[in-house]
Image (cartoon, rainbow, N blue to C red; front, side):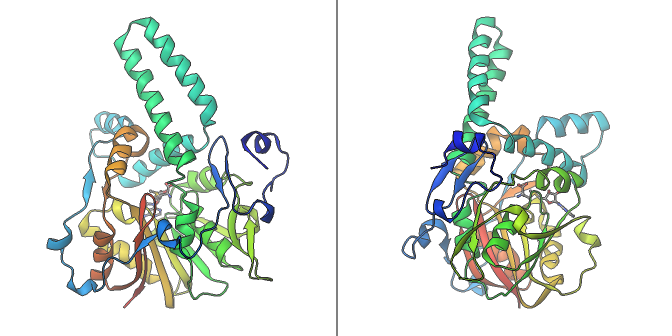
Length: 352
Ligand SMILES: C[S@@+](CC[C@H](N)C(=O)[O-])C[C@H]1O[C@@H](n2cnc3c(N)ncnc32)[C@H](O)[C@@H]1O
């Protein structure tokens, strides 16, 4: 069995194979999860279809999203210094650097250090230092729980459940606001022969968030020769990464899937129809738009509160799947599947 220590010391770049099917391992930075789910369990990973007729739903029924208003120190200090509101592009460059630092932490090691730091701070009798040390420890514990124990951010089983059963063959996939590109890689593993184009206007995403995404992270996908499960790695996939503003893209209607993860909720209502249109503009006839946004649940509100300095550089809303679906329905999409996974809502939709 390849546990944490074994992988850490393993020289193999592809340490997992079909032999490890249905196992899960805790790595210092993330969880590896090669567990499948049975048909019976499907609804445990994606809870689907609470709305039967979107035309009957109104904003009065579903209410509006919750806006996260406690911004990071980096943003508030930048705004004070520059005497202006931070523009979205700058805010994303700060966010991506800050978020990436958490994905590369050796969490068990940092937790030990952080505990020692906390004990030392107690002997200093300085309330500011003690408060800071407690804050650091709470953030690390929360990150450990959300990312390494629950696997809520990558959530491979939830994403596989949400993405399964699409009628596509060797699909071309466009990922808008791709960041590290996780979900397009999961889709690419599930639909063999995929050609993936990732787009993000923050170059750091291409060079570092995606560039340094762990080569030995296993995605569970399909073997095209046998139709059986197969473990697939980043470098098995066909990926092009474009650094540009989505507004500048000049693709035709050439993609089978247009995907975004955590994009729609960063735009106030007056911009949402434009964001919806980005998901329509490059889709082939019969293609799918796939979107996820963070859920408006108590745990998520707590997460964005405790992790404000790490996460809150940009305008952000938390919404329900009904609110997300209504935005897309009103923007001219049919909702084929809607549901929620661990921390995100998900939609599969098609232009009407
Ligand atoms: C919240 S992130 C996506 C969530 C991602 N899974 C993560 O882990 O950070 C949204 C990404 O969209 C990118 N983005 C936002 N607006 C964009 C635009 N107009 N053109 C290109 N990229 C954009 C940002 O740079 C950012 O990396």
